[in-house]
Length: 594
Image 1: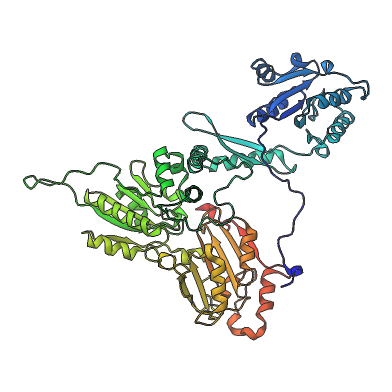
Image 2 (image 1 turned 120 degrees about the vertical axis):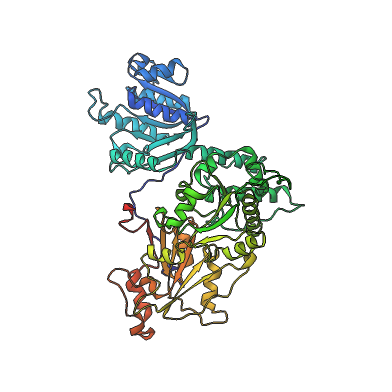
């Protein structure tokens, strides 16, 4: 394929390059002394910047907050009249400012706050332009309030999260910008985002930060990237290397850093926020739960009456993720029957939140590279708790039988004296395509469908089904190894190879608010997923002509027309003339009601 034919996303101007700065040993200069100046000063102080405020009449005319911060030695307030003048500089404030900047040298940003619309003492446009030119001559970025063309940067509508118990401010901040198109609406959007996040989310960030420090004790923390855990790849599902008895310091740091990335991706926010240092050390060591949460009761005496209830194990499916798709049986198990919940890592926090706070929840550490050990650990924990008379809910995503390893657990529990109750769940193999607008069967398009996995036992490759024009193929647990899966389908292995133009959709986080669908062809899907950014596990692949069947006006005559009717043209009508893929974010309309 020629370089000219590569159709990566086209940039659409008008956005901002949203960055975050740490301003240690750097200074912020603020012109003006009203409430907006105080707000800008506080933001700069929280970024560890030194702050100087220059205003007419200096401290005497400053607002109450600036006066207080000056008395606390948090910032300095200067009077324009007290600034040195240079005989070679222009007269007026711009000349004084030029002289001041020449002496200061470490000014990183200049904020002109006395240009607010409606202020009777507002700085004139001509004055602001002169100050802007002085700063630009020294390559100092400027923000002039309510004068967008004199702004090299803008301030986002920002929220910094606090510890909900102590009130201590955490490291987590979010910022929203409308790029000057609706500042008030931007503030509202920010509030809505904050209201949707768990109140412990800031503490979760601080706990993960502490665990990163434990994982990399001798490394300088990299402030150039927010996500340095395995940041060279976009998928968090690369195998975590097993712990070697002779591993080097570098290998140990790499393994521990990958563990940090894994728990950051999969553990519920409340669980992360509540982590103790002991739990952090256990995670970094790759250890599993080795002891029950409560002491085991002593074995009953032969001469005593054992009145303990018999424990039981429930194997239940949580569905694809949306809480409204829980079966009544699963909801009852979680909310009324459970004494202990042993959950797979992919079960969303919204479902775990249904479990009463009095019930202990354990999250399986079933990450790539240690799935077998984690599976054994969870089965042992279930049996141990059931022997103590507890009702154990073994919670699995989707349907427990469909690639959920429920069969192994049934045989294990039976061999240890417990016949589990298996509660079906809505399988993501069916629900995922539906949420993406794809029918796994459709008259005129797909007469059958097949479900398979791309990962065999202990990570081995599996043989994928060959191409059948009238069949939809759903591949679970394969997005992390997408290039290999695509290569196997195109090659055909021991079956019929798939045409390169075969439609494929990758449905990530199906049924959840951050669902994403990347639709393309087998030929271009690897580039499409890379272009979309970080992966969002869990993801499934839907392959076949059903992918485009219900798009727009629909295309349900695939089988009637046959391949000789130019499938390439069919794909072009679906994706567009110059497009090679399409990305769609969020749930279908109407799901907010559920």
